[in-house]
Image 1 (cartoon, one colour):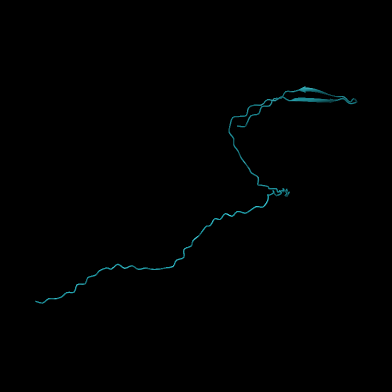
Image 2: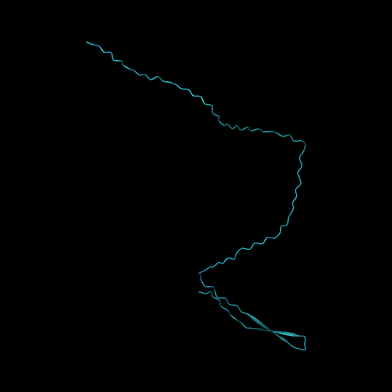
Length: 115
């Protein structure tokens, strides 16, 4: 009998840690609030105020004409009645007196809206 030796390969995983260093610039904004007290000497006085009116030249604007058409529908206008008086003036020559004799003549008008 012959004995043959067969080699056996065994693999084992060994954990490895790799450390990488990289320099990175990080922008940083810092806000600083500072209260400063300003000393005041003596009392304060109010300043003067002035108002000046400056006249400007007149500006004229002319816009284009607008044409507006409206069609309105509704009831007719009511009839209107009105009486008029007529006066006659008579002049007499040779005298400085002028007489006015009132005469009345009733006139009636009726207006209605077009249909």
